[in-house]
Length: 445
Image 1: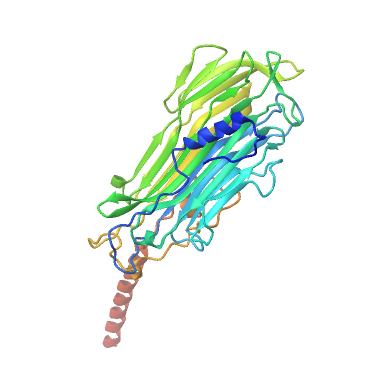
Image 2: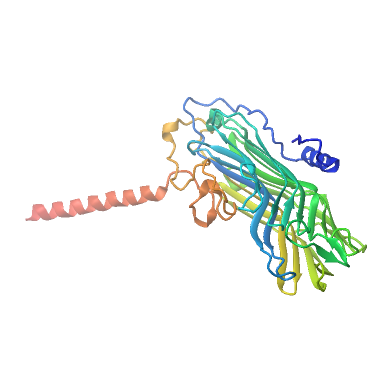
């Protein structure tokens, strides 16, 4: 994902952006589709859905109020969000890939340059790319550059057992910093030195991918994956109390829905961190749920320093495999800064989620693609078309976009509701008994 910018950009940002983009584990350019076993004319493997989302930074709370009065706060803001949505029954679009620099209405983001989106099937060729100029969110969050890429793919053969890519998306941000003293917000101070609360850099990125994949015995599975490329992090940079967080391993999440538990799986590669503070020995975090807490003095310039507590932790993996549905969510790295019991900062770096629902299994001993389209069941009305992406979508694990309206946020199951046949059969039996009863009474009279 090369970044082409003017020569006025600092050389270290350009080099860092290119380095991070080259290391992406999930390719933006989709590979060619692979033909499956020839199927009967009018074949239909059953409807399927998928959703993948990755966010570089999810700011649950950024509130400088405890340190200085009269400043705004940021809450529930996501930066560098890449996603892919698939709904084989969607109209007019079946696959949608998107990359957004911010997932909330933030002051300072230029209009018309906040992201990229590509949908299929359509006449527009992909991938679609959008670049972002520097912006500030009320002076609390600053981004110096960015680029988003989105590519959606759809082929008719995907309904007949063909495997291949569905969506690819990626977003890169450079120079992300929080409370760095730019704009209307005064600079933080630690040990009488100007600094920033958190700096992610020189750049970071997120990527998602969805695919149709073979899972054996002629079956087709749905793969959904999300990943993040986190650069090194620092809190109170350039001061004796600097906390340095070096990312050793990058986080990655993948789910495959294969139609049953035996062919479905969740694979999560957590981040590994090395945390160093004030020249002390490094703390290595490599297991989900592990954390390290550090105390320091800091505050807004020209004010008395306050005792702050910093907690760095690795998030847990949440997963669920239920029949044809698979979903998982992971918060790669969580950074919390507290003043007493008040949260000054609560941010998740590398928030990943993935969900998939495999095509319905074909019965009667016939392989996928051997049944004509007329024998398949209609698509449930609860399935939301993939092309309808809200401007600020809810959490993909709480309510994946392809299955909006399903209970507990699960992906919508496609197939015939056998309870309707059960009630219908019971009604026929009851009607026959009543007719026989009244017929006998008529003959007696």
